[in-house]
Image 1 (cartoon, rainbow, N blue to C red):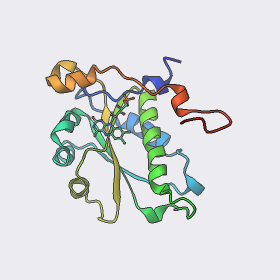
Image 2 (tube, helix red, strand yellow):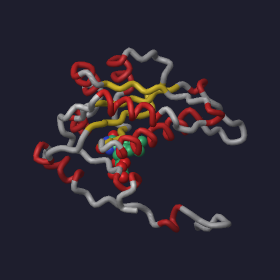
Image 3 (cartoon, rainbow, N blue to C red):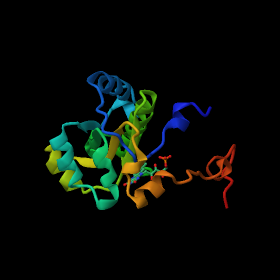
Image 4 (tube, rainbow, N blue to C red):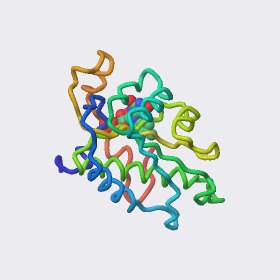
Length: 185
Ligand SMILES: Cc1cc2nc3c(=O)[nH]c(=O)nc-3n(C[C@H](O)[C@H](O)[C@H](O)COP(=O)(O)O)c2cc1C
């Protein structure tokens, strides 16, 4: 189990400058393509900022706490519009957001399988990202994911190094999963 991509995927902070080859990128894109979605609507679009100048422009939209992402070889930006997916009336779940979460996980697990490291971010200025990538205003920037290879932790400042070395933990299984009936206070 410990060598499964589910456990190997980690949001670390130390990216190396090693570029991602075109071949690896294409393999990743083909994995992402097979993500499931409601009624197969595939409401997502993903923009990969790979060119150094484009990445630099994107980095101006990230806060100080996420500047470590500037060393990643690519920034994947997931965008969508509410009208690209369903909204159910009985419980107004926004499926475009749900499905974008699915595609984010495909990207992260697929990247892990290909030996890459990923780190998802909600910390960004959406308008800044849209400007950097010429994204039309009606799209929502749902997630930005740094993609690259793990690198030298010596490059990290003290605060970021502490986050890199953090103890990763999770809620206990019985806090999140129940069998047969709702069994939380
Ligand atoms: C939607 C989302 C937004 C996140 N935003 C940030 C962020 O802005 N900055 C950051 O350093 N980590 C961010 N993270 C990473 C989480 O902190 C990380 O996934 C969590 O601590 C669990 O660690 P793991 O990914 O290594 O399992 C985000 C993760 C998700 C799923």
